[in-house]
View 1 (cartoon, rainbow, N blue to C red):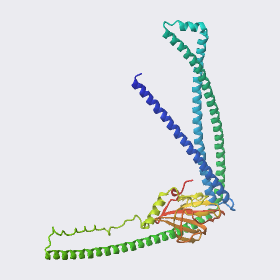
View 2: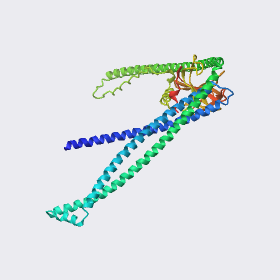
View 3: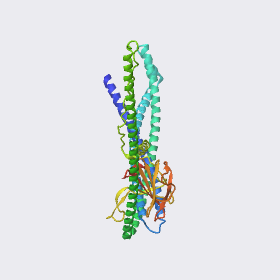
View 4: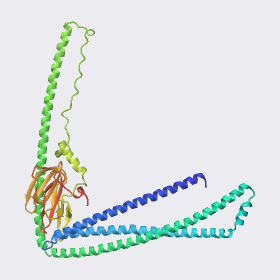
Length: 470
């Protein structure tokens, strides 16, 4: 093998080794992500179970109970998929362990055969006379020394070979034990997966029972839905009216500030014109005085005229993306709110989303569509509702069917907290992240429920991408 080929071979081995290390690292990361998601799903299922327990305190079935059951079924299905992914990893470990065991067994057989050959050879040449004859039959002293060194190295190699056999046997035993542990782990995980499937079937059966009972109350549900649509329309109208008022006030304030700035700029321009006229008159008077006195420039050089001030373009308009961001404070608040997208805390410490933003088919009456302006969150009774970001309370209002609502301004963004049964803030209050606004309204299931909305100007946004994922 040439020197070049040796280097190519070494480089190839290094690439393969590094690739294997990267694969192992990615596998480890995937396992860590699986474990993390598994814990998160288990916590969400626990919260859903608590919410379901609270809804069952009601005397009869409700849509909230059906939504919690559906959410719980979805979470448990995700957990089962997570467990199946974990089983796939374990199967991969088992297959790798089996391959390693076969390789070690082959290596051990080879080592034992080689060692047996060494023992046979040593037995046949065990005579001290044969050893001495082998050394002293050398043609020269140097050759005799080399033969002696060969015998010494041979004995050392035989000793090392025995040690390698013992070490390989230990590695093989460790791999066998690891394989057994992996198989035990797989059996336990498969058992857990089956238990989750059994529970999932029970949840589905319970959901079907609730669904059928609600289906029998279709007329009542339709009337209730129509009432909720009217209530939601009132909330939307109230929010848009307040936001339009805020926009108009911000526009008036910006216009007044712009007018004041222009007046100040005009006054400054006139002042500069008057100063320039006075400077020109003074210069003309000085020139006449110099001509009358016949004063030479060389004898008395005139003072260097000050350079005229560079005009300032005071009429250059200050552009703003949005009138609600006209002030530096409002702009900074908007930018900070945007920068925290996906990081905002939940408005309640304990809660489960039972209604998602946007248009959805009715869970019972499939011919009817529902539209949620925000996230419907089931929460324990009397749960504190908190502000998700710094801002100013611009409206506190109440309406039939929705309880109290609090609207908070965050620059060009607004958060709206609907279905509160008590209030801790008033219009004009400055709030920070975590400020308690009130408590959740108790619904027909005798449990808490709120609606959380996010607005950009007068346009509704999906709140889910803004809050921390669970």
